[in-house]
Image 1 (spheres, rainbow, N blue to C red):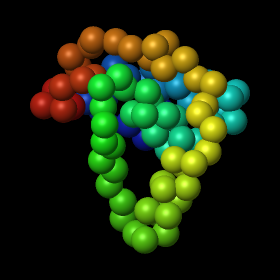
Image 2 (image 1 turned 90 degrees about the vertical axis):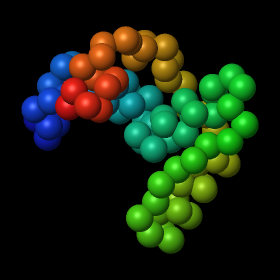
Image 3 (image 1 turned 60 degrees about the vertical axis):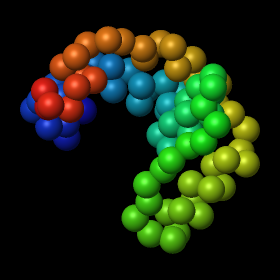
Image 4 (image 1 turned 45 degrees about the vertical axis):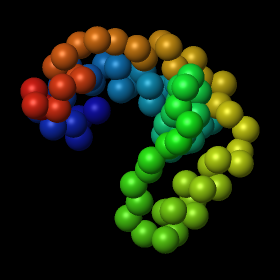
Length: 88
């Protein structure tokens, strides 16, 4: 996580663990994020940002793949220095 902005250094260990779990589960960061969003109870829509038509197609393809085996609850936290962008 050496590429993190200095204000997000508090998230370094958490993100390192997340990337290790992704690698172990053979899941891309995008797939993990889509899976997490799809698993939010009560959410009926997901909004994603894209930078190109190709990226949009890649993201749309993720909706039809099997869900990841990740336990997203392992990454829950309430640290305001990570959650509040004003503190970055």
